[in-house]
Length: 311
Image (tube, rainbow, N blue to C red; front, side, top):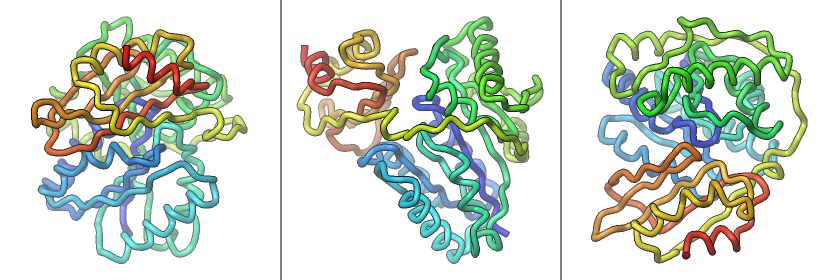
């Protein structure tokens, strides 16, 4: 049976960054790998960041755009059927940061997928600089996306103090307890180190972390009502201005509760990927992109967001 791994994490946690390393590691073991990338937005920005994996023999499939649960499950089922027929040995699924993982497990239990796929690992990415307080909906997503994880990786450890890393672990424990989940993570199940320092032994350990069955008391809400996105195409703003103004979106309450900003900008013939959360912003060179900026959050005011970006 095809082993399928799930990489989960709340918006901006760093799933795509880890996925690039994880898929490349599997490809380096001479395993035929395919990645299924599922983005919340109509423009799948994260998929563009994975294009370099193709040169390493990793294939890439995508699902883009918000839609109702039934439609989303049909799209995912269709993709997984197609991938099973193409002889992959391992499929790595990165869902969006507001994904209800129960939906994924429901799909895997359906015929004929239950005859073709076997759940391998569930790996949860948690930001070491996780805000102290989140909305009830965000707290639920944080917990539910981690409940089945065999291993939790803290991201941005190189930027976090020991107290902040311990605070993120405690926050995750509180979120799990709040939704009456019995899952508790022991120290050996949490990896809190700079990802640049992950060794081959670390990756091998993560690659066999497995999963733990757990249930949470479900919080019923429509993810696409609770979390919204604002798209800015062809803004025409220079990289320096975007890097200067994007952080203000997270602190201006008139913008709404901004959780993540991502997109691309061209600067002197070079494309850069912009990725920002409340903890900070990065701008990394990439081979190609498109003029788009996506803001994801709660109660967003698009006009005010654009005003802040252009100031």
